[in-house]
Length: 110
Image (tube, rainbow, N blue to C red; front, side):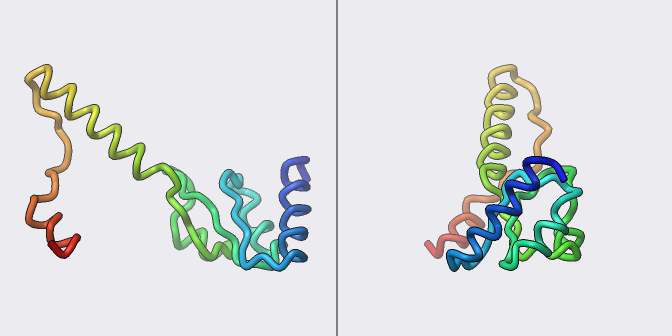
């Protein structure tokens, strides 16, 4: 086992002994997720990574919760900057259609 994995397993035991309800390993390498889930003794939460295992695969490995962390914000910021550059340059942004104003209002119950 690698040193970071040893440390993660040590922390999982410490959290479990302290009565934690779950264990979050944000940067767990794909090849260690199953071992961490089995050894944590508590529901394991990991960060979704584009190109990484999908939800079904993570579930089969024993992951109880998948978080997106800052991914949604960073994706939205990237799209906003891309669109702003396209508007400034007078070109098509080639992005998916933005949700309508009415659709967004429906989400918020307004």
